Length: 435
Image 1: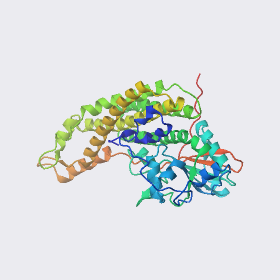
Image 2: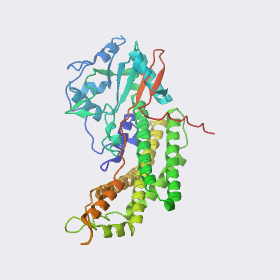
Image 3: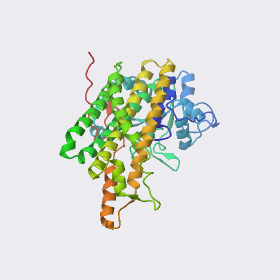
Image 4: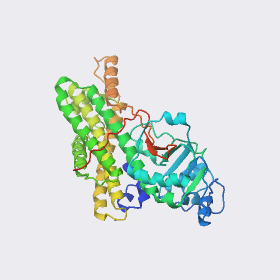
């Protein structure tokens, strides 16, 4: 995520809050260039059926399954699912909601928790508009969602895959979401984004910490136990703030931000110290003498292990900082959507640049060390050098992380709205009340 790290909060532009507008991709795409108009059945010509029904004072009839799309998106998009997806990505409110009925047996397999107050308000409006006659599953669709887990690896959001210009949602009928439904769209975008960043970020930083724990010796254990504890504490504080914020509270975020910053700046110093270190070691044959590498990274094999541990902790700290910036932006956006926050924007822009540079450094160091070709002296056997190289690559390599995440809500037969936990996700602990 080098070009623009906070693509992950691109959906915040749905709030039309200036403090989060700079978090978007720094190249804008107009949504007004498309001339075709889509109806709820993706046919061209005329206003959408939903808007026409609303204008006539008739309650629109929604199909039992579909993809709720902002009305302006259907007006500007072409008739294909790919065109609608492109329009969604460029929309001021890049979010949609997929819905379909589910059977009692399917409901029984789902693990659910109470929905937070922020999403509850939006979902009530959607449910009232759709008026489902049976249990219904809703999935929040963030067209920019795959970028939330770009740093994690190849995994992504279930249901966000695109193949040959089509999406996993192409089988569903696009339905115009206007009026009361659209009013809650920006809030839903923020709530879903923060929840996803919370879940995926926690997995990412804990995976790096587990790699550190796997290579600890007795002498280093006490120091790194404290380091990992500090990171876990910073992450837990942020998760608590996010929970309170989405439950309609206005929690103090300063302590959580400070904990995240402390870990980030410690790791930033480490990364700056080793900026470009590998490039200086590469010889004419494209290889690096393992003795020179060990000296550059510390001085001997054990100190090279120290470097690897610090690199993983740096990547964990960067993940926590990313989560902190998202939480900070969301808190501001939800607290006062109309305030320009001009001074705060300048400060946050500088923080983003710091984050970008640290993330680029960590990524570069990781890539160079996982691709490095080592060599030894004439008396070193090829097998021993190969073993060193493989060991280094294995320890430096980013951990495998499941970024397969989605935000889903279930409407039960009684009309209750619940959040569906992703498979394997722990049930979140209820946030402690503030004094």
